Length: 302
Ligand code: PSU
Ligand code: MN
Image: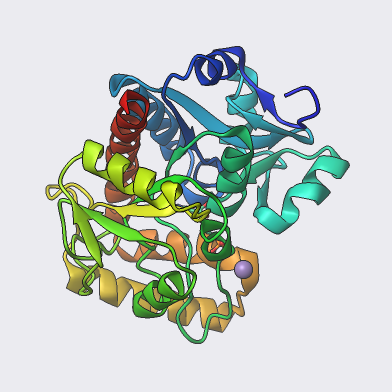
C-alpha cells in the first residue's frame, strides 16, 4: 500500500498480507463513550476477546494526523487519557489528518478506514442511528454502513435512539441486518428492544456465508450482525426506558445537539441507572469482539 495514507502496525499488516483473520475495533467508545478507567478495561477485554477467537485486533484511530490501525502502547495511553483527543466521524477525517490531530474514530470513520485497509470484520457496542425527538441528530454510522463492505458486529443501536426509525433507515439503505441466535433487535442495554430483525444466523460460519452471498452480488454495503448483551448483565427494559427518557429530557434542557448528543446521552443514562449501564456496556463490547473474531476466522476458512 505504498500510496495509502494508512498506517498499520506490523503485526496487522503481516496478518492481512498472509490472509489471516483481523478484526477492526473503534476508538471513540474508548475516548468518548466510556468513562476513565472503564475505557481501559474495555480496550483490554475487547482485544483479548478477538485474540482468544484466533484473530488479530486492530484498533482504528487518527494518530497525530495519520489514519491508523493498531496503537502503540504510548498512543493507546494518550487515547485512554483522552487529552485533546477529538471525536472523529467520517466527515472529520480530512480535517483531523491535515490538522495533525489525535482523533478517536466512531463506527462511521472506523468502517470507512476498515474498507480501505480491506479488514472485513469490525466490532463495537452499539451503532449510532436516528435520535429521538427532540434531539436533532442522525448518525453518519448509517450512511457509512451503506457503503462500507464490512461485517459489523454490535448489540443493535443504542437505546438512547429511535430504534424503529433506525431500522427503517437501515432497510432504506439496503443494509442487511442479521440476528445472531436471535430474531429480535437487542436494545443495547436490554436483550429485546421489541422489534423483529429480518434474518437470523446460528453460527459464525453462517454469518460468513451471508457475507459471501452479499459480496458475490457486488453489494458494497456492510452486513450488520446484532447480538444481545449477555443475559446475566442485561438490564430490564422498564429501567432503561425510564433512564433514557430522563436523559433525553436533560439533553433537551441543556440544548445538546449534533456530535455531542451521543456522549451526553450515554453519560446521562449511566448516571440515571446508577452505573449499571456501564457493566452491560463492557460485557457486550467483549462479547461482540469475540463473535467478530469468530466471524473473521470463518471468513478466512472459506
Ligand atoms: N457504542 C458504544 N459507545 C459509544 C459509541 C458506540 O457502546 O460511545 C460511539 C460509536 O463510536 C458510534 C458513535 O459510532 O458513538 C455514534 O456517535 P454519533 O451518534 O454522533 O454518530
Ligand atoms: Mn450527527
